[in-house]
Each structure stands twice: as C-alpha cells, then as structure tokens.
Length: 363
Image 1 (spheres, helix red, strand yellow):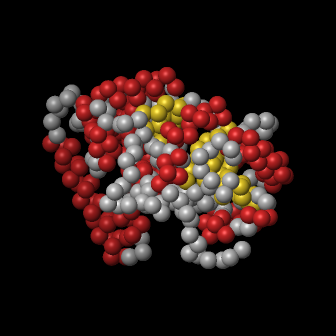
Image 2 (tube, helix red, strand yellow; image 1 turned 30 degrees about the vertical axis):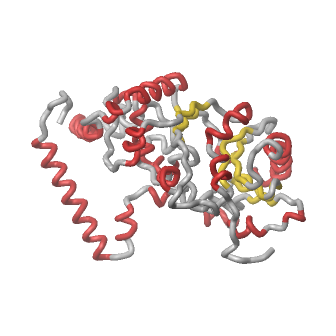
C-alpha cells in the first residue's frame, strides 16, 4: 500500500449524478427498507426558503409537530409556577410561526402534508445529503418528522444540505465553475422505520470491487465481532447479485441494514466515492490505495479497546453555536459571546412585552 496523504480520487460529474437518490431509487426500490416519495423540480420559492436565514415555519396546528407538543406535568416538573413556564414555551413556539412562508409554495406544501399524513412520519433528505447534523433540535434526537413544521425546521437548521445546493460537484474532475452542471434539486421523504443502529454498515466499492465495510454507528457492540464473517458474506452476496452489474458507477459507497435473523439485506443509501462522503473507521487514503489484487474485504468494527476514541456523539460539533465553539478557546471571546447572548435575551424580552396580537396568538 502506497501511503500518500495526497492520493487522488477520480470522480466525474456524471458519477455524482448517478448517486443522486432520485436516480438510483427507481432501479433498486424493492431492495430498500421503506417507501419514498421524491419531489423533483422544486419551486424556486421553496429553494429560496431553504437558503434563507430566517426560520419561519408553517401556520399549521402546532400539536401535529413533535417540537411543539404540550408538556405534561409529572411529579418531576409539577410545581407552583409550572403554568407560567408553559406560557413562556407557547410564546417561544409562536415566534417561529408569526408569518407563514408556505404562501409562496402552497401546492408543494399541501403535497408534503399529504405524504406525511399517509406515512405517519418521515425522514427527509435532498439529492445526496440528509440533515443529520440538525437532529439535536428535534425532541427524539433523530430525523423523524410528524409535520411540515418538523420537516422545515430540520431542513433549515442543517449545514449539510448546503453541500447539495452549493457544493455537490466540487470534487468532480470535470467540474467547470463557469459552466456548472444543470440538475434539479430534489426533496425526498422516506417513510420512517425504526432500525437497530448497530446493524447498519457502510460499504466501499472501487473499480467494481467491494473493498471495505465499516460499522455505521460508532459505538461498541460486543456481539458484532462474532457476526463479522456472516455479515461480510451476506453483504458480499448482495453486492454481487444486486449492485455490481446494475449500478452505473465503477466506484461508489453504499449503506445497508441487516436486521435479525440476517435473511435480508436492505439498501439504505448510495453515496459518491469522494472525500466528502464520511469514511468512518477508514481513512480515504487507505481506501484509495488498497491493493485490489488481494480480493479481500476489510471489515472494521469499533472494538472495546478503541471505543473511547469514538465516544463523542456523531455530528456533535453542530449541537452548539459556532460562535460558542470559537470562543471556547479564547477567554475574552467567551466574555464577549456571553455579553452578546445577554443582550439578545434582553432585546427578545422587550420585544415580547411590547408585541401586538395581530394573529390572535399569545404574546
């Protein structure tokens, strides 16, 4: 193996387009875990809404949203001024719904509501990326959306989606900034299915050869080691029978899920073979320089002796404001940051006290 941190990956615009969910899903739908609805040619007004910094959410019944569901008093939270705190929560929720952004894309909004109602709950993504970095804002700490309020807040809180809108082809060798490829931004709603995260795996294919498999959830599961050979065999058969001769790219990355008793392998996603795709327990340099002549699939798991290395929750760098992370290494910056937070708090309190009740909402 040649050890070079500058090893190149040869990927083209066409390869990236082939990994778009709307491209591969129709061909492999019967192998996926759940049904999906793909919204193509999204209205310009909706894309502009996703790109905007303001967080304005739909004026629909907040009780349909997991975010704004009523808190129920228990022995832990039932105290004399509990009702006052609940009123503050309502005020906070109403700030999000002061105006209705969906007036600019009413037809799409109705279609999204219809799909969510039919599925019960959904997990969203764009062509290539899912908003996994913004799950911290959701009650369940996952991508499960019960309403368009949940959906839009999750999408607008994500930095990952900027990749699909602005940087999808940055790593393509034939990408020309002056003549960028024309493609439709898609929104995909997948029916929510609960899965066991320990049984999801990321698989790397180079030049039509399965070369590596990584545990997807970077926590230690003691039972996985004894299943390693069986899982390698099952995933290898799935790749040979389903993907190798039928997918359009020579090199790509695919995610699979194997529920007990491991009789089925479900395709979760297909990603471009490029550095912006997370390599998990491998480095991209390793993947690029592996010897294909060995015809050996390296399967890596989080083991007990290295589990501490992966103890940080995935995407945790997105769980606090970037200003806070930057200030944490500079005492004066931290002081300035806290002062700014205090000023914002006072301004919000003044605004709330003097606010009008134009829409009949509690202020």
